[in-house]
Image 1 (cartoon, rainbow, N blue to C red):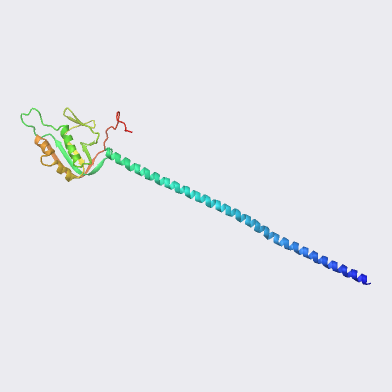
Image 2: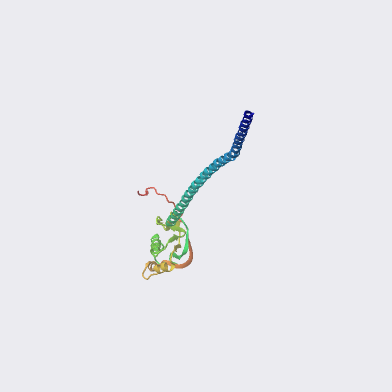
Length: 237
């Protein structure tokens, strides 16, 4: 009888222990399964976050690179514009110096013409020669003239003034009197230089030529339109 009771108690104890072990295992499995799902989500979210961070960093790097390239392009464009502007200004200065641009400003108009009446009994009539015109033009240059024309022909450093018979030739164009010399510069200075006592104009008037000098607030000197061909002259290295 005691043995039966002991066996029953042992059996009951084993059953209880087995139940407890099974319950513990089941609880552990349940706990494991409950923790496993969010852990996997965390890992997935961490991986996704890492990928997003890497992509964001790559985009920031690309943006930085694009900004640097944009700054380089803007700098190059600015330098290009500066160079173009400088070259344009220099070209404009050269065009002005060569007389290829029409100029406007205050100045004087000097008219040189033959005498109103020729001396009686004279064999050689008094007429305006190219030397007279060259002398007046040189006097105006010396007085500070910045642009000069003769009967509409621009006078430049390469302008040749000559005479064929009774005709004055300027820039290969035949000119006839009266001759109007238009000079842009300080009107008072140029007029004073021409009217100096014992000067050029007084001497030409003494020869019988008629010379008038008038100031103007606004004058226009046309651009040089002759050829600019160099056959023998070349830039020196």
